Structure formats: structure tokens, C-alpha cells
Image (cartoon, rainbow, N blue to C red):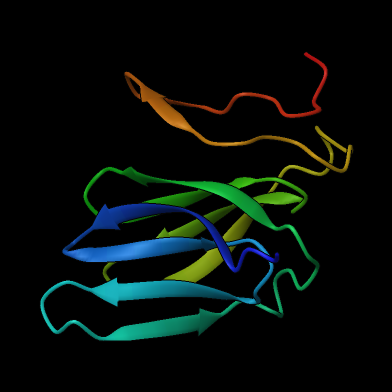
Length: 115
């Protein structure tokens, strides 16, 4: 079984689904009940991308990198996606699963990262 998405977070009355095997972010609008996607294949098109989503502040959702070389960041006012590169700091294949806020810090438990 392939998982399209792995993790979700709510921001601005939309549910953002973290892409795992698909090359797009899933977005479900709670007001209109429409489901749309945002293509991210130019930023990262390999499998097993992200494993977790977390709403941060009023207008950001972050995706926890599983095999992606960066943290995914969605601006929830525009639904624009970008990646914050972490490849210089962590070069292993399977990095983290899930994220949580601790005060102002985002904490992600290591999957195979050795810290």
C-alpha cells in the first residue's frame, strides 16, 4: 500500500496534507468543501518526502522531512510552497517522523537521525 499523504495540519480553515508518495500538497477547504492540490515536483519529486505536518503561527504549515532534503513550508495565505534546505546539516536518507511545538521551537523526533 502506498500512502499519498502522511500527516495533516489545519490553518486558516484549510487542512494541509503532507505529501509522502505524491508530488503535491493536498488542501481541503473547510468552507467550500473543495479539495485541491499544489504541485511540488520542481522542489522535490522523490518518494517518501514528508512524514508530518504542523501549523505554526497564523499563516504557516511546515512538513517534517522524512527523505526530503529540507523542511517543507506552506504560506497558508497564498498556498505557496518552499523548502528550507537542511542537507548540509543532515545527509541521511530517513530523517524525522512528526513534529511538535515546544514554546517557539519546532521539535521533530529522529527516525534514523543519530543525535
